[in-house]
Length: 144
Image 1 (cartoon, rainbow, N blue to C red):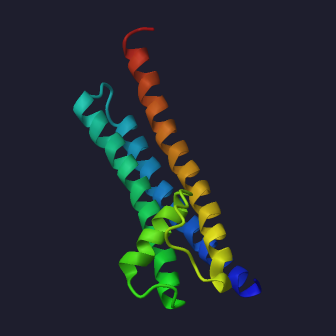
Image 2 (image 1 turned 120 degrees about the vertical axis):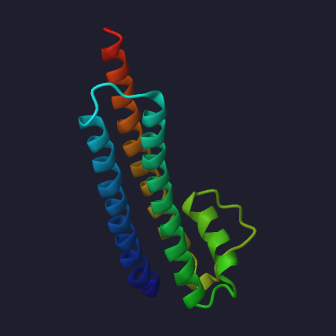
């Protein structure tokens, strides 16, 4: 159990930092867009919101990849593709159970699931913040 924590906690911290980087890229992108145009076209708004969502998704996919890499290094999977599948299912807290870690490393899957649910929450908060601001500005333009 101690080895699980000694590997899992630093991995979780690394993922938190990675997500913070993606948030740090996403929100300034949105704020720059917001500040440099008085009236926003629908196409530009869709593009910027899509970029914010893609950056958040990319951050989550990169974290799944880091966990998958750890599982391959630990010898849990022979292929990165299989490890990535397991990681994606675990990170998203789906837990199909068709692929599991050996008893020695099972606690890592719980740590990844906790990491994933937290990071999907952060991603949702960023996207909701940007979308809420778009709606607020749209209503202001309509004079409501």
